[in-house]
View 1 (cartoon, rainbow, N blue to C red):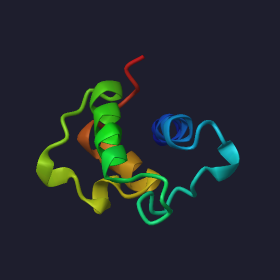
View 2 (spheres, one colour):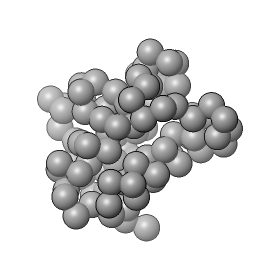
View 3 (tube, one colour):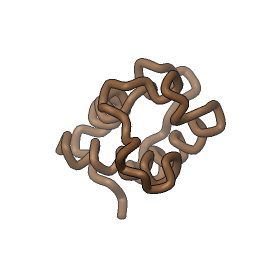
Length: 89
């Protein structure tokens, strides 16, 4: 489950922010903001992706780096919010 969620998140990041360039994919713990992969607008897109693909509601109070700052944090956040999380295809 963890691997499936992490792969889906990484695929979204590579497709939408890195234009498909897998060689630039971040390490799971790498900060998406500090590395310049995602900016403030990108965070909004990322939230929309989480809400649509994983059927989550992300509250304003949850939009913090501990939840959204890296692929590892995003994966943990999705799994904590929905332990049976699978992408809604």
